[in-house]
Every structure is written in C-alpha cells, then in structure tokens.
Image (tube, each protein chain N blue to C red):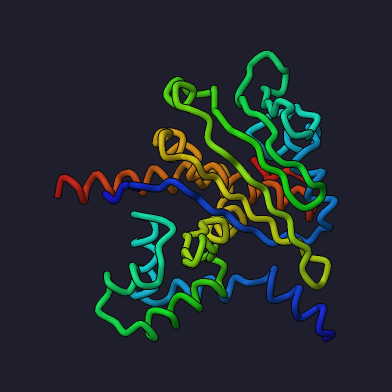
Length: 151
Length: 117
C-alpha cells in the first residue's frame, strides 16, 4: 500500500461552466457552501484579517477556523485553515488555502485550489487530500445544474 | 461548430482525454510517483524513469491535457502536481452513493485478500 509522504503543497483544478462571479459566490456564500462543502456554512466578511469560519448547518459546531489573508473578488481568495472536526487536525497549526479564479474562453472558468503551508500539519494534509476533489466536484455540479450532487 | 463551442467542448467534455491519459503504463507510473511525492520537477521525474527527457515531457503533456497533472511555477522551477479532480468527476458521474458502498466493500475485500495472499 502506497502512502502519501512529504506532501506540503496540494493543487486541485476544475473547469466550470459559470462566470468568475458565480464561482466567487459559490465559494463565499453560505447558502451555496452548505450544499457541497460537507454541509459547512462558511462565515466571513471576506476582508483581509477577518475570520474565515466553517460551521455545521445548524451552526452549533465549528468545523473550520481560519483568517482571510487576501480577497480580490472575483479573482482570488486566500485564508488560513485549521480543521476542528478531527482532534488530530485541530491540534496542528494553521495551513493556507488559496482559491484562484481565471476566466477562459467560451463561458468557462478555471478554478484552482492550492492548499499549502502543510509542512507542520501532516494529519491535515492527509485529511484534506481526498476532500478537495469531493468539494470541487460538488461545487461544479451545483453551479452547472443548480442542484447538489445526488446522495 | 464555432470556435467557442469547440473550446467549451474540449474543456468540459474531456472524458476521452482523461481515459487517453490513463491508458498508458508510463503515465500511470508518473501519477503514482506524484501521489507518493507531489510537486516535482521534470528532472526529478525523469531520474525516476528509464526514459529520455523528451519521452517524459511527452507523457506529462498528455497528462496535462487530461487535467490530471497541473503545473505551477516556483521561482525558476516548474513543478508538477497530481490533480485528482477529473477522476473524482468521472466517479461522481457514474457511481452513486448506493453502489459506492458496494464498490468500496469489494475494493476492501480485494486489498485484504491480496495483502494476506
């Protein structure tokens, strides 16, 4: 069995038939994030220095703790990331997530998620490795069809 | 078909490119290498394979066209990253939650049998 080692930067990319503004709304508006981001309600003013928080859909449990580093709608968002839903990841330092939104020809937008600063957070690196694919697939389905992934 | 539509088609309906990219043992080996350690340069990947630099570049280009490898600049270096999202999209398109449980049960059984066997 192969295990992932020394992974300190992870890159995920997806092409979505939507405008950059729609993609920006998809990653910043809680009514969207609740439908594809493991049910998380993302809570932030998206201004540098503001908290970036993820809550359970009933807002009783905090899943994610972070701080907005850069916000340039609808092109770029970066924030720190500490996952609280798992004891081991909660004990690790904050890592960083950057969302890069680039318009392409034909009404397509390229979305790239770069999760880095994972050097001191190996449990987080393993934990998010499968998760981002699921999240981006769900975001693409939601923006293209107006419906969340089945199931 | 207009140029715009062709671009749309090639960016969104790229299942053929994904399967083409996966339909070669060297390219799958390159993906395995990136899974083990992500963000490698061409030189690093080349030293792992008994193949010319040109050959490795050609395979990496097919993987990039299939969206399975994404490159990023870091200073003067060009780093190659494994992008698993296209495989996830294929998975989500054809495997629903119900069958997923059966598939993962079978996959677990297979790996258990192979580990003990």
